[in-house]
Length: 93
Image (cartoon, rainbow, N blue to C red; front, side, top):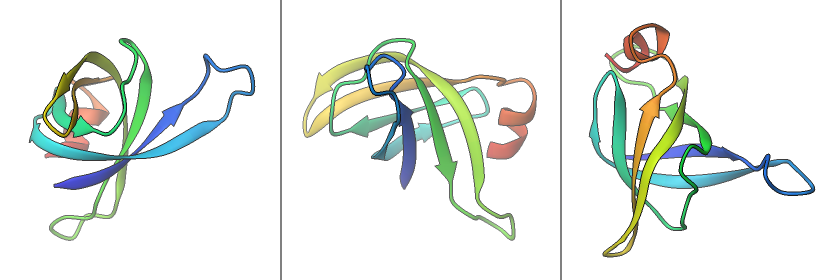
């Protein structure tokens, strides 16, 4: 599944944000694993936009990068949802 993620560029002098594409390989109530086109920093904050499914509207879930390793066709990224036991976990299921 391809989703959109928003990368907050707090570390850059100008600030701002960047929209990136994330190919989700595995998703659970605690986080996700996917493939991105560029390297992300560990502990970087992302907001993932989960598309509408089964009558639910689009959902925004915040998380932080737990790992990012070069893989075939991009970077394999692990993302832990910010509030996996609360709202984020309920949004996914």
